[in-house]
Amino acid sequence: EVQLAESGGGLVQPGASLRLSCAASGFTFDDYGMHWVRQAPGKGLEWVSYISSSSSAIYYADSVKGRFTISRDDASNSLLLQMKSLRAEDTAVYFCARQREYSNSRYGMDVWGQGTTVTVSS
Amino acid sequence: SYVLTQPPSVSVAPGETATITCGANNIRSKGVHWYQQRPGQAPVLVINYDSDRPSGIPERFSGANSGNTATLTISRVDAGDEADYYCQVWDSRSDHFVFGPGTKVTVL
Image 1 (tube, helix red, strand yellow):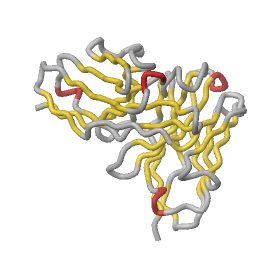
Image 2: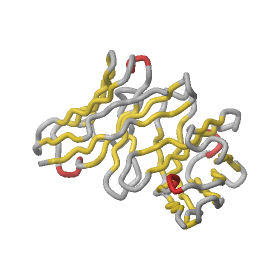
Image 3: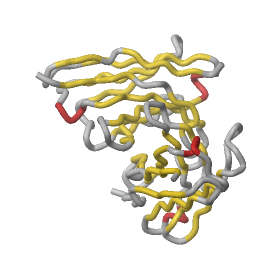
Image 4: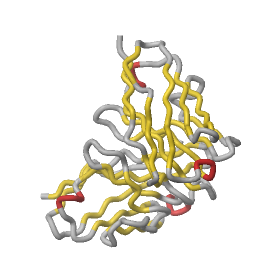
């Protein structure tokens, strides 16, 4: 079964760091680009970051650029998001999602994890 | 950056047709993807690249994209279709993936 499972969320203080992980199973991980998408409480979906299958293309939303770092470990079928200098507005459920590669516009995000919750509060 | 607009809500009676729009300048030049998100659940891709239905998505879901508006149509709506629906595109000018603000579909 194709699955994505996020972990690493929690309650942290403003300015702290946190690392999220996404474990992939049931498919050839290194054939897919991967995303992080977040959803603040009661709000819509916000794209956070993308990494291509070869890690040659990496993009960030303006709201996280310079603070978040996306990476992948194909040996362990894992997607990572290193978050630093966290702010209250980073509070959200963070989802990982896969995207088939061809061009960035051709395919949507066809498999999603259930999300992990990050709360930034003092 | 590229901005997508969606109506905040759409209400529809069971058995009727729900139409959800996603507007942006020259959106027909982009591939539009649509996601369904039921309360407390992860999003699900229901339409890929304007009009393709992924495996397992009912034929009642269809999409179109023309001019400045992309459209998700849900025919013969039932209670299980009550959810938030988001459109999404890739903006090559900014190297950003962009979601619309979402439309809440209520089945009366």
